[in-house]
Length: 289
Ligand SMILES: NC(=O)c1ccc[n+]([C@@H]2O[C@H](COP(=O)([O-])OP(=O)(O)OC[C@H]3O[C@@H](n4cnc5c(N)ncnc54)[C@H](OP(=O)(O)O)[C@@H]3O)[C@@H](O)[C@H]2O)c1
Image (cartoon, rainbow, N blue to C red; front, side, top):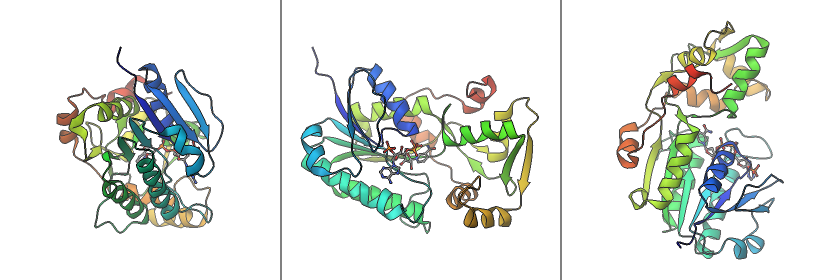
């Protein structure tokens, strides 16, 4: 019998991690999942609670794993947590740990918009994280995701809450584009990228088959519901994002939306040969409610 894969996951309580752990567990992967806080484990899963990813305690537990999927990341800064320390320096720490533990492959979810000439702090930190993985000489697959859609992702939860309040804020015109991808396709792709050598040492946009305006996405999400769309002047939206940490959108949420980032779906499709879920169709079925 073939030996089952052993895969380490960081940021185990997050949205992508939860869905991915379930999928991998169902596919008989032995998981070693690391989170800062306690969580419920799946079949085949070893749970590790670590506040700061301390090398001494982690190293013996993750040694010689087939892959490490690094899903720690933040999209909003505060005095306590900033992009440089979490998105970049913690990634560096994980890369060093992976080297010492002789991990065979690193999978990283960066961001669609990360590039050598970006001027945005969020994408700079993601780009530097990517570079630290590439420089390590460990095999890697780096994904640059657009918006990942699922029942429990942050934006879906925001839309559901807003429907109850009968008011959804749309910053500016809402005419800027997103290229959403369904979480079930993401989990399949990440698994494929571990077992399939075609993904080795590639940077790949993680985008869905359709480019949709933000406004259209919300309209499709609503189906026949009559929730009010409240278009907010972009200057006012930025003002609130800067001055009120509880505002519906963070500064970088707005930057990413207005940035109009779309990616190379054809490359992803050719590489994976997968059939992708149409997010438009998914929204029509009401499956996210
Ligand atoms: N979802 C998307 O649409 C999307 C789009 C582009 C890029 N991405 C990237 O994909 C990755 C996963 O996304 P996600 O949606 O699953 O994010 P998420 O739900 O926010 O999960 C990220 C995880 O990072 C860990 N984390 C956060 N702050 C930390 C800190 N200060 N120290 C240590 N760990 C910390 C947490 O794990 P624990 O609580 O378990 O410790 C958290 O659950 C992130 O890197 C994100 O930037 C996601």
